[in-house]
Amino acid sequence: MQTALRWLVAVVGSAAAFAAVAVPWAVLSKGGGDPWDVIGPVAGLVAAGVLAALGWWASQAGEVGGRRVRQSARGGGRITQTGGSAGTGAGSPGAAVREDVRQKARSNGTGDIDQVGGNRA
Image (cartoon, rainbow, N blue to C red):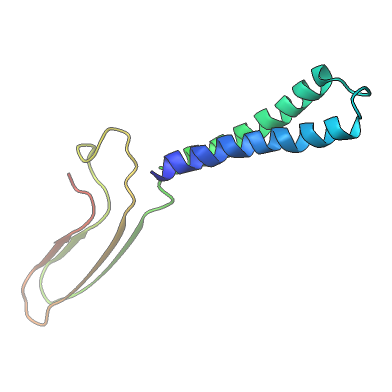
């Protein structure tokens, strides 16, 4: 949903850029100084540049901004912690997975601590 909304903003922004260049130019030229065969391509070039920039922004919606893994453990026995993403079997191929894994463990005895977090499929 977020990606579609970003692409909608990109297309509307491009159309607005076209209008922002073309309409004032056409009004100020008073119907003879600069014909639409000059105004249209120039405004179209501006709109294409805006679409390229906003299109890049829209395509970043599914990207992972970064992965945070925080782990803390105390114990007298063996401690094993694993966090983050491993394997390609989870989700659809190429899908970005946002992760924020927090793990904390305490053991006052001599028992083992084994924690696994995140996407481990």
